[in-house]
Image 1 (cartoon, rainbow, N blue to C red):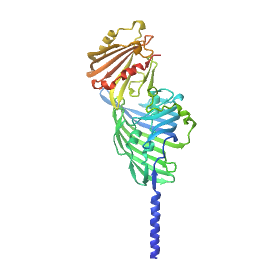
Image 2 (cartoon, rainbow, N blue to C red; image 1 turned 30 degrees about the vertical axis):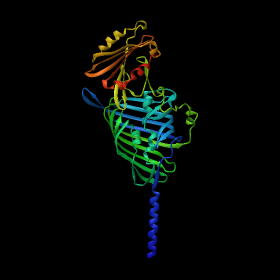
Image 3 (cartoon, rainbow, N blue to C red; image 1 turned 90 degrees about the horizontal axis):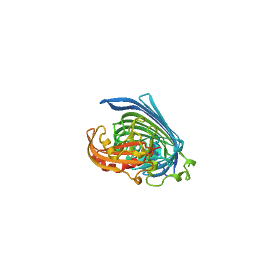
Image 4 (cartoon, rainbow, N blue to C red; image 1 turned 45 degrees about the vertical axis):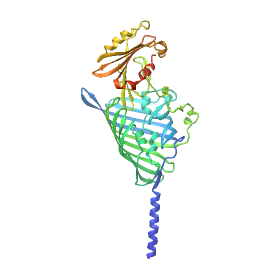
Length: 442
């Protein structure tokens, strides 16, 4: 009897050891380059936007929903996270509802369904090899970063019940942060059922996005296919608290993102022939990453870098953009339509300088530069271009302003004003001139 019990104890110990060993799972994604996936992505957001009106905080209900279906082929990866991918969208749609009554629907043009997403200085930039995108298309396709999902797993064998810290790089990408200031996001292997390892991800995240402070509470779960070595499903819930920034209002919201990620064979739309038009440079050409703004009301088109953000209403009398660099608000550009003139009798640059000196709210202290551009210095389609640079105070704040007058061959006139505080003049550099050259008349 004693010997039997001894043997039973040994067998039980071996059985327990075997069971525990079976519950240890290698949570490492297989290499990403040249692998293809079909992604089904949905997003639901419900919250409120708070703005200042007459010195008081006024909150407005804000809702958004989006759905994306696309095939994705990874082209480059590092540290277990995708750095570059080609995508073919089947659908990309969103509906944004402000104050429960103003709804805006967006969708992707057929000629912009083939896209490339490339990580530049840790930020994912989506562009089309077929031509520039509109701001609405850019916002529609710079969604939850599916290239960073693989960074949620630890890249090693984990026992059931054990946790690991999520890598900073993956957290910043998945939370869409330009800068990460703090996080305690952890993953935990909850259970193993068949070929699926069930993962829970929870924690707090703080950082900067578009110059605004953001705090998030993350509660997510994922399914990892042990055989395929892939995360195949993810539900990502976050509570967002965003402070007002230079280009975004204050926002509090509950967000739910659901992703189904299916490994597939190479599709025809993403084969090597389709990839021929994908730029191979370290950074994509500016003419592809620039954003196209069409203003049919005021009669011009503008291509601008993504560091310029539109902050004026779509139907406003002026176009106002703000330039951000590493989260810092550097300058503001305002484009205003001016009365049509006889192109053979454009106002003198002195008259333009005098006119700008009388701008409402502007107290000019010193004129720094006055220049009339020669024909070879002007962009194609610009009949005349003046620039006047002056220092002074704008609404009581020390400011340097660059005033431009642009005249078309038909006599259409646009005034473009760049306002920058003195300490950021050097950081603005030649970006004012770059923007001016991209303003085109019909």
